[in-house]
Amino acid sequence: MTNDEIRTLILRELRRIAPEVDTGQIDPSQELREQVDLDSMDILNWMIAIHEATGVDIPETDYARMATLNDCVAYLRERLK
Amino acid sequence: MADFLMPSLGADMEVGTILQWLVKPGDKVKRGDIVAVVDTEKATIEIEVFQSGVIENIVVPEGQQVPVGTLIATIRTDGEVAPSKAEAKPPPRLPVEAEPKPERRPAPPMPAQPPSAPHRLRISPLAMRVAMDLKVDLSTVKGTGPEGAITRADVERAAKAAAPKPEPAPERRPAPAPIDHHTAMRRVIAAAMSRSKREIPHYYLGTHIDMGRAMTWLQAENLKRPVTERLLYAVLLLKAVARAALQFPEMNGYWIDNGFKHSDAVHVGVAISLRKGGLIAPAIHDVDKKPLDELMANLRDLVKRVRAETLRSSEIADATITVTSLGEQGVETVFGVIYPPQVALVGFGRIVERPWASNGMVGARPVMFATLAADHRASDGHRGGLFLAAIDRLLQEPEKL
View 1 (spheres, rainbow over the protein chains, first blue to last red):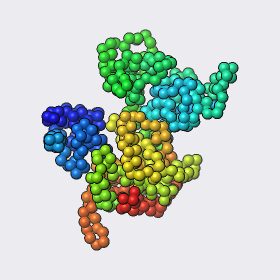
View 2: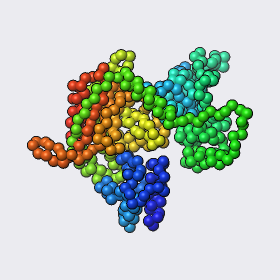
View 3: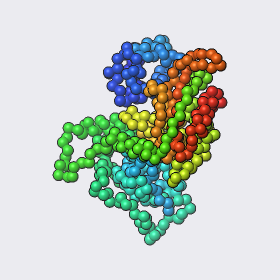
C-alpha cells in the first residue's frame, strides 16, 4: 500500500466512527485526540476497523506511536512491510 | 386480547412518534420481538412486545405522535381464538389520539409508501428519521446498503437531488417544521434533571481509588488478546459497581410512590454522550452475573447502537443504577445527577498518575476519583461510604471480577 492509500483508509474508518469530523481539516502533524473527540471505545473500534481492513493487529502498547495522523501512516506502513 | 400501549421509556418521556411498524395485522410475535420504531425526542428506540401472540390491529399509524400510555396496537395473545367477523368490533378503549389534535405538533408527512404489502421497507431508523426531517419521499430513493437497504447517505443524496425544486404546493397548509432534535433533547434532559433535583435529596461522597492493580492486570490481559477481544477498563468499573450493588441493596432499585423498591437484578445504566450533543444512559442487563468478555461485547454493541440510534425499549427503561465515566473527557471528578426513579449514580473521573502513600512508602500510582450521588430517602452517607469502599475493594482484585 502507498502512503496515500494508507492515509485514505485510516481517514475513511475514522469518519465511520466520528461522522461529524471534517477529515480535510485535520492537521496531520498535530495530536489526533486534540483535534477529534475520541474516547477509548472509539479508539478501540477504529483499531478493529483498521485490523479488519489491513490484517494488522495493533497492540495497546503501540497506541503511543500513533499520536498524529502522520504517525499512524508511518506506523502502518512499517507494519505492512 | 392484550392492549399494546405506547411505553414509557424513562422518566423524561411524555410522547412518542411511531416512525415505523415492523409488523402488520396477522403477524405472529413472541415476547421480546421488536415490533416498532419509536422516536422519543431523545432517541430512536426499537420497541419490544411483552406478550406472545398475533398482531390483531395497528391502531396508531406511522408518523403519528401520541402520549405515553396510548393504545397503539392490539395483540391476540397465545391461546385466544381469532374473533369471528361478527365479533371483530373495534377495541373498546379507543385511542384518544385517533384524530390528531390541531394544537399538537403535526406529524411530519410520511413519505409515500404503499399502505399494505410490501410493508417493510429496508431502512435504518436513522435514515428514516433523516427522511422525515428532510421530507424525502422514500419511494423515490434507491437503497445502496445491504440487501438494498436505504441508508442515511441515500436519503441525503435524494434530498439534495430534490432540493432545487421549489416547494410544489403553496396552497396547502404550511409544512410542519422539521423536528429539531437538539432542542427536543435539551428539553427532555431539562425535564428529567429538574425533576431529579426537585424531588431527590441527593447526598454526595467521593474517594480516591488506586487503579494500579486493575490497570496492570488489564494491560497483561489485553496483550494476550487480539484487538477484537480487548477489554476497556470501563467494564471493570461496571462489574465492580454491580457486584457492590448486590451487597448494598439500598443503592439498586427505584423510589416509587413514596417508597423504595429494591431490584434483585442489577441493570447498570451507562451514560453515553451523543456526538450531536446530549446524552443517554441505556442499561446493560444483569451486569453482576456476566463475565467481563460478555460485558465488553455488550458495551461495544450498546455504544455502537447509541451512535447508530437503534436502542431497544427494555434498555432505555429499566436501569436500576447508573454509572458515568466522564474521565475520558479529562475531568478528575464528576458528581452526577440521579436519574429518577433510580436512587444512586456512581461517577468515575480520569485515571491520573499521583503520589500514593501506602505502608509508609510513597510511590507513583494510577489514581481515580470515584464518587457516589445517592438518594437520602433510600440510604444514608454511612452506607454510601461503605458502598464506595466495596467498589474500591473489588477493583483491587480485578482477576476475580
